[in-house]
Image 1 (cartoon, helix red, strand yellow):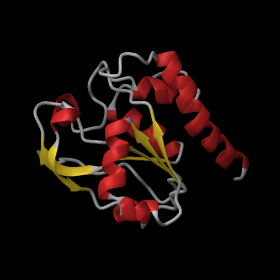
Image 2 (image 1 turned 90 degrees about the vertical axis):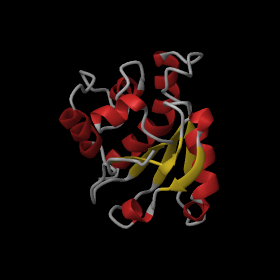
Image 3 (image 1 turned 120 degrees about the horizontal axis):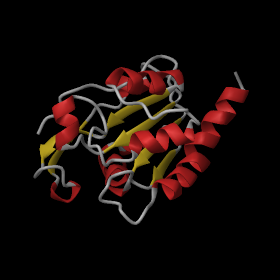
Length: 170
């Protein structure tokens, strides 16, 4: 499987959220977190105190860029069965310099353990340049032990607080 679409990022992006690899549904839609049961967009909307959860790709892209959030995945290509992270093999990582040279990323947040493990294994050089890397609980439906409310609380404490600090400093 080869990652079929690029990152969402612009020169104003301050934080980077990384997943592992797009799910089958996301690959079909050609955009991130496309599975209807993935809680990413709902959690992010809650964190950002948006009135509505973005539905279209255009709305999703807009909410990210307006809030200076870059979004991508660690994996450029790999062998995978369906959408199961546990089956990932033969990883080729994305070149994070694409984003790090285009924006002034000040923090990296990984969406779940697999994304965090892969980032630290394959992109360790980026951890060494002084940008903090924080693992957040996965928004995947496979992480059923975490409710939307619990995810929102943890994500808001990390991402929301960080973004709010950035807003105050503008």
